[in-house]
Image (cartoon, rainbow, N blue to C red; front, top):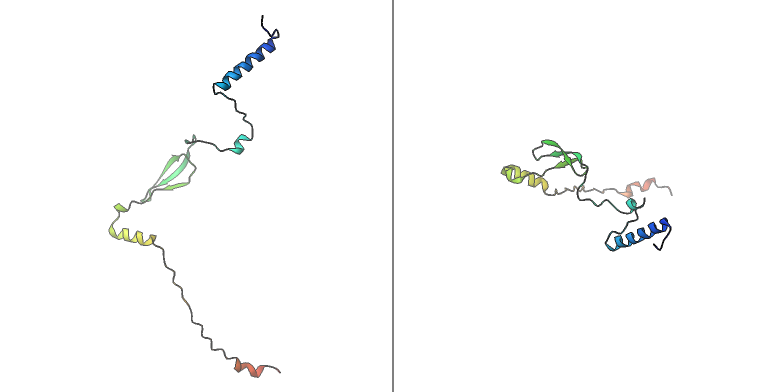
Length: 122
């Protein structure tokens, strides 16, 4: 005869031994509640949803594509090897920082306070 005559006690005993063997085998249970999403982030390498995105080539043409991340426009870089020498120079000049010209006005201070002494009341 079994040591537990009550069927509920027998079932509880079987469940406890099953849980112990599951924890030993590496199947530990996780306590997931409503705060789990607020504490961590989604750990994904591949996004399941794709978003409509505009892909702009270096010549100005555009294509509508589906992209993994929500980005509005993706611009492809320009290949400098396809340009002529004049276009290369013009583009490289645009990349250089522009120097600001400072204009300083010479202020002529020819104010003579002695001219206004006669208006001063004593």
